[in-house]
Length: 135
Image (tube, rainbow, N blue to C red; front, side):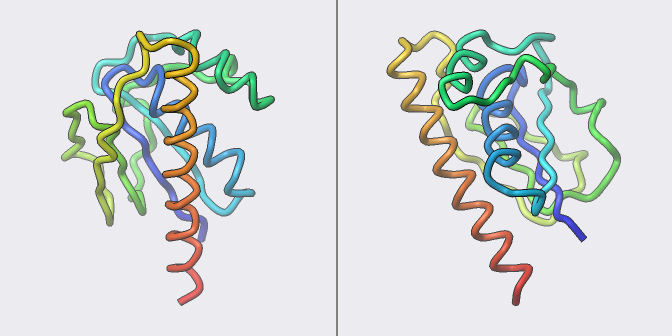
């Protein structure tokens, strides 16, 4: 069974979208990624699109979703991004808050720093999940 991970931030336009993308890039079909927001903006932040384009990943096909739009499943992990969001109605075995700064108004270099931090955290989460699966 492939574990499901949910990334949540308020607008689902930036950090949670980056995290979902990095699961898709690095998990090689070992983890299903979802992202959502408590008050979705309805669009992906253009800086997030540009930032991942630098890594040859196209975020243009993603859309900003509400917590109401995610499937009614149990998630292995529900990760909030440090924006004060909680998702008590989401069934999750594990919960964590990554306390990431909101890069929406950052310069390109500052944005890339947050993107790289998200990638690092996602890689660590993937290792943690795959290790737990093999125990």
